[in-house]
Image (cartoon, rainbow, N blue to C red; front, side, top):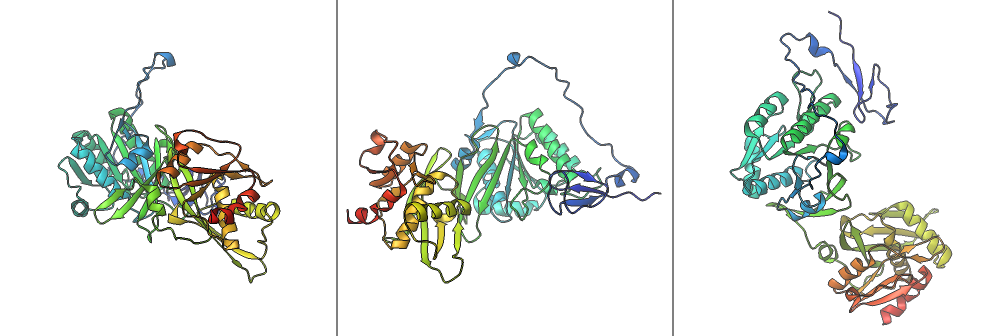
Length: 462
């Protein structure tokens, strides 16, 4: 019998090649081609028929004749998850949740399953990584042992399809999609062909039966979901669960959502009883702020529709290197370098011989230009060793000419500052809001970054 020829498949995009290459010619990813033997199963005796379902037989219809009912969101009872999903889980949706090992993906999904089972829903938790006993122990620890929650420790798709037809669940959780496999295919679980085929089976089941499906996905060392990129195109929602092992807080973000916004942020706290939703994010991020310390400025950022107050910290110290160091955590380093050049040229600050360290406290990340003014004030405050008042916040975009530009949703940001007891806010002068959100606030309008830096000592004395 002739030896089966090897086929090399790109794990990032699914490109197939008869020979190995260091770089995929389709997606240009390095070291992503994996060897597979696609024809090996054909020679096995007693091979099962491939249970690929045919088409739906649907007819082409004029778009005006199609019923356009609104998508109904089913709240899960976890407020932070519902915020990210746009109100809850949509019937018949296919969702993908990715994250590093140990970040809490399985714990969060098990809590969601327990909440929905307590509402009378039939929930099936499929695990290809843990035994049913392990899941039962974790469910007992976090208080998720509900009667309506069914557990299936299986990773063979033919068996899983039979169980789905018998149980007819309202929600299915697959932990994880990389462990599922079709016995008829020769490739190993986690390969491109297996992940693509297994995900398509769950997608067809979700769309034809109106069952919501959660797929748990592993991530690569770069932070992307492992497997073919077509996996992210197939699903309706892609969620990333982020966190640091040295911190107890976890961030849930949506990078794709066909039923809502992708700009929302969910914050969770890892506890002994599972994931706890954190609703007061601003209070949490400012709870450990240092008092009367130079280089600390409060900024109100927008995470979707939610205003969040964050502490931007800067440390400027004399450099003993030929090239001063620039270390940034939580922001784009190129944007910070641009702002430092503006401070040198437009505000007259001598930073060419200073090491600059910048940090967004609490593990948050900032990517909106509205934080420019707060960054500039933090750097100037540390350089001059002039602390800002504890009740002062700053926000505004800084241009290359040193001008301070207006920012979106200023009223909502001011309302959040007022709610947390801030009495003074430095804002751009080209937009002067009026309304109840400004009552009790002393709004300081500035036109240039040099004008804002000149207020450092004056506001401290005031």
